[in-house]
Amino acid sequence: MKKRLFSGIQPSGDVHIGNYLGAIKNWVNLIDNYDCIFCIVDYHAITVDYDPVDMQKRITNAVAVNVAAGLNPERCIIFVQSHVPEHTELAWILNTITPMGHLERMTQFKEKAQQHAANINAGLFNYPVLQSADILLYKAEVVPVGADQVQHIELAREVARKFNMCYGNVFPEPHVILSSAPRIMGLDAKTKMSKSLNNYISLVEPPESIWKKLSVAVTDENRKRRIDPGNPEICNIFALHKHFSTQEQIEWSAKGCRTAGIGCLECKKVLSDNIVKELTPIREKAEKLLNDKDYVLNVLQTGAKKCREIATQTMAEVRAKLGLR
Ligand code: AQP
Image (cartoon, rainbow, N blue to C red; front, side, top):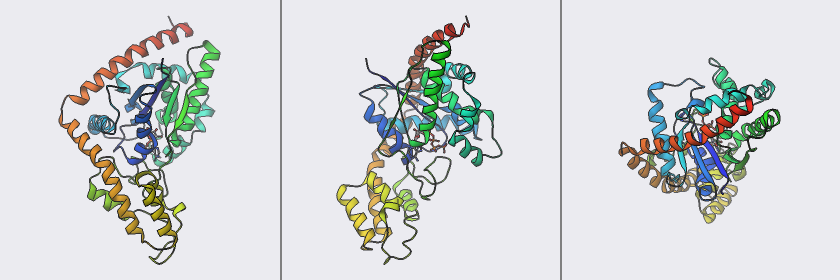
């Protein structure tokens, strides 16, 4: 039997190349070796201010883009978190064994609390408990995520251990799988590329917009003039070259930067062309899927049905251990 894999993505905005390189590409590579479940985590996305009018469109887009990027629903489960009520039921139970101190240490909570100072709600604080429930509900053993989520998965491991210790063995302790690009920086080169910060290239970004964004993206800030040599190792454009360009182009870019043999714009143009080449089939496929009105609906209905079967079984076990029936 294959080990179970679980991972999620928030419908909190445009899926971007950080999500793609840090998570989605890895998911696609792992799909044959694991029993995979991928979740659009809408309950997580409502922990910050958002417009309810946009939510269903964001969910549909997230599904279409993920499928277009290679998550074939014939070979994995794709579903929406709120379609399976057991997620919140298990989260409540796990809340009762999760120490507040552990949640107070979570870096994402501290960052999001700063970013959303006018709405620091209990859901934002408890986000990692719901995430633990998402994973443990399916007894997933592996969780491929970007570096920003590692602390949350470690918490899920602790929560699983504590539950098993207090009430008896139910949950495996999940392990993180990182991609080769666990932290893609935004085009500002200062913060992680994020849906909620306007510092990204979306997976369905049109070619002219990719170039427009890249042409003003931050490079090695010490390289002020075309004739100044730069340091590729601290240049975010070079970091992106490593994921989209050929070995020859990567070497050309590093050498050209160090010797001032090429300008930043020239270097960005090659990167832009490569990103366009990789993203165009994804954008075109996503558009095609979105034109089929029932496609996403069917994928999500099938996914939710399969997930509910697993979730019902786990919750029966959990309730029995807790003496709740
Ligand atoms: N910049 C990134 N580099 C590498 N991996 C990343 N991931 C996110 N940003 C990067 C990984 O993508 C998966 C899905 O992320 P998410 O939607 O659950 O939420 P997030 O990590 O909070 O992503 P965003 O884009 O930053 O969303 P907002 O702005 O809404 O908070 C995860 O595996 C994540 O690690």
